[in-house]
Length: 416
Image 1 (cartoon, rainbow, N blue to C red):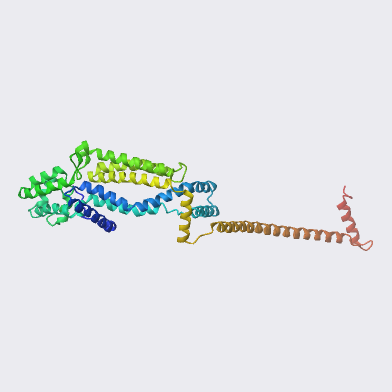
Image 2: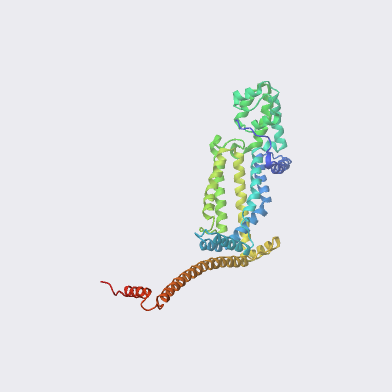
């Protein structure tokens, strides 16, 4: 028993955990008015209440899922259209066409993620509250405090705890809250061992631990502070129920959404739906039964909630839902004409191609001009030669004889 925590959850989750802990304490005190002091029942009611507060976020996510079922075929066509194209123009066109589809249906790529981002901190804080019930329920905290105070007043209590119950991390300077952190990890059998190790305060330990065990008791003689494997029967019922209810809940949600197996993210969603039920079972086997009760209660509530949501959306026209979503999106932000943007992008692409063709023609024309000039120059020189050859010379002169011999050589005459 080495991992000691602060009595209450701190950090970023601290304020959320404090609010949820206050709700849990109110539930416990309300039940105490009817002489019902049971932490397991408080966990079930607490889970139902917190889940109920998150219904608006769940409904919003379901609306996005319904709209996505109609929107995904168009998104898949766009992906297929630009498959394998990685040039800048094609990628920009694909992005603009995708955004145009989202705008058409009044949705956003982050619409489905936002509710999850909001609920995750709540769920993590909820887990911390369930794991540290004595830190948030005043009456239960007082029972642990009575024992912790007696231990702290005993000389060398930290050494005795380490030698007899293998509790490490405590010292003579440890605070009452740190001692309570160690005591909250005790199973039903640890309390009798603690009383034997501290005979001077055995009566205090016995009276307060009996109340703690009574508060933590669950059906079949289980204790929410115990591990399911400590009493396999009926302890393993909790992990089995956690897996079964989680599996049915995910199956129910998948059937309601009607997601196409070829849709983007369908494969990862299927893997997640298979993994999560098994993960919840593993969590329930590794941690105290109280956490397992939370998982089961949460899944049962989700099943009931999903059934009600499915009945609601059966009466809702998807086209009407899309129309309302579009109107709501227009109020939130300025409408963007993606069609005009695509046309402008196409014009730029055409202009770019035209500029390249014009540059090529200019180069070709320059080459032709240079070639023409060269041919003209050569022709001019030839004409000049011919002109020079037709000149008249004085009869009987040496020049006339030389020219006559030149003509004979060019015509092939005079050769021997």
